[in-house]
Each structure stands twice: as structure tokens, then as C-alpha cells.
Image 1 (cartoon, helix red, strand yellow):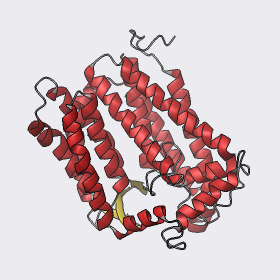
Image 2: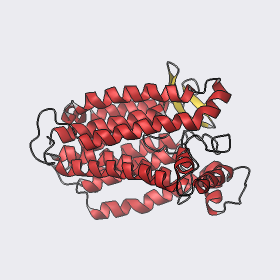
Image 3: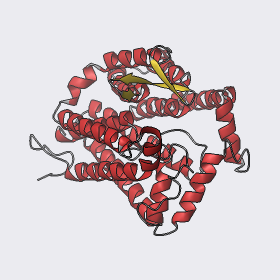
Length: 370
């Protein structure tokens, strides 16, 4: 029996709602990746199962990691927070080197390991959460002076953010900032510290957009869908057309028109358009509902955590899951410009899937030890 959150659990307590929801999202993700990618996989690799098989391998690895981490005491992992973060900074630096980093569509974000592309920024997100938890645990034992916070908390975040912006990857940098500010606020950081950071972050985001022509083009296409219809606005216009075609109940599984080279890289960041086209508004709502339920379970786990470290660690993971979901879905329905952030559990991308399953494994550990 599960018992109530916050009560003393059995040694191998399993949070079945969280596990079942995660499994449902991963399985659906595999199905929709196969469906959305068969045209591109056959065209580019002569194997319509290419993307599906790669994602299946990452899903298997992610499942193993999830189980291992769920049975691991998260306090042991927090102790290694600074080491995780230093490794992450090293990886973020070397991926920028032409001899090491793999360049795709003008961005150098991947390191090829044994034929698989690994994205250091995904590992950096979880490393940052552990580092923030480690530091905030120390800071709460003393007065949170702004100078100390800037040196040991926000400066490392800025370094990681700058390295990611150089790839370039604005979406991940926004998540870094959200994790840093969110966990600090949750740990009891003074409100005026938080408010002071907001205009600085906004100014930095504006500069980052202006300095990169492709980001400025995305902003213009967001403001005016008719701007460069065969260039910067092409992808978002095709995404809108696919979503509109889905209607209430969708055109049926496998019947998407968008996957036939109309939507660029449809199996990754834009895969929700295929979900909406084939399963309609109802199907899209189910996926959003599953993600919201998973976030609600994570919030319940954070509230029931037995100690400060568990609460802050869970908050960081909640921000990670929620921000990635919101940024992807908001960009797909044109509430914000396209960000290049994958939809958790659904989009193609081994690093992203492994990150999400790692996060859920840690949350299950917090739940088990609550």
C-alpha cells in the first residue's frame, strides 16, 4: 500500500500513479516517433525504423537509470552536486570545440559517443539542480547575503548559461535561469533578491535575441506569420496547418500530412503538431493532461519530502519538467516564438528522454524516503 505522502513508507514503496503515467508517456512517445519519423528515416537512412530504434535504446537505458536512482538515497547524490556541475561545465566547454562537438543546422550542441549523439546541456540541467540544492542547503544555515549568493549560486549559473548560449541554445539557457531563480526562491531567498534579478534576466534575453540573426528572424515570424513564408515562418506555418487539420478527433493515426516533409524535423521539437493532427484536440488534451498529472505528483512529492534537501531537489525537478513542457507547447501553439525545446517523453532525442527519466527516478527516491 502507498499510504499518504509524508507518512513513513515501506522500504521499497512504489508510487504507482507516477510510474504508470511515466510509462504511458514513454510508450506513447515511442509510437508517435515511429509514426512521425518513418518518412524522414527512410529518406535519410534507408531505414524507416532508424529514429524509433535509437529512441527505444535510450528508453531502455532510461528505465534502468530510473529504477537504480529510485532505489538510491538522494542525499548521497546531493553530496556530489559540485562535482556533477564541474563535469557539466567541462562538457559544455568542450562541445564548442570543432574537433569534439557535432554541428547540426548551425548549432554545436552534441558530442558523438559510440554512434549516439549526447547533448551536454541536458546533463547540465540535472547537474545544476544538484548543485543548487547542495549550495542552498549550506546557505540556509547562515544569512543569505546577496554577495554570497551572487558568487556561489548565480555566477556558476551565468557561466553555464553563457556556454549554452554560445552553442547556440537559448531555450536551455532560459531553463537554467528558471531552475536557479525558482530553487532560490523556494529555499527562502529574500523577495527583493528575486525581483532584482528579473530585469537583469530580461535584458540579457533581449541582447541574446538581437545578437543572433536566426533568433531575431524567429521573433519576427512570431509577430508576423507572413514574414518570410518560405524561410523563417515556414515551420511555424506548417505546424499551425497540421494542428488545424486535426480538428476535434484528428485525421487518424498514421494519416498525418505534416510528416511528409512539410514540417522540418517533425520527430523532434514539432512532434506535438503530429499528435494534434492525428489525434485531434481530444488526443492532444490527453497528453497535456498526463504531463500535468505528472507535474502534480511531483508537487505532492515535494510537499511530502522529509527534509529541506528533498524539497529543494524536488522543486528543481518540477521546474525542469514544467518549464520544458510549457516552452515546447507554448511555442507549438504560437504563444511564444519557437524555442527548440523538446517535449518531455514525446519528442525524439535520447539525451532529453534520459534526463526526464533520471528526474523521475530521483523524485521516486524522494517519495520512497519520505
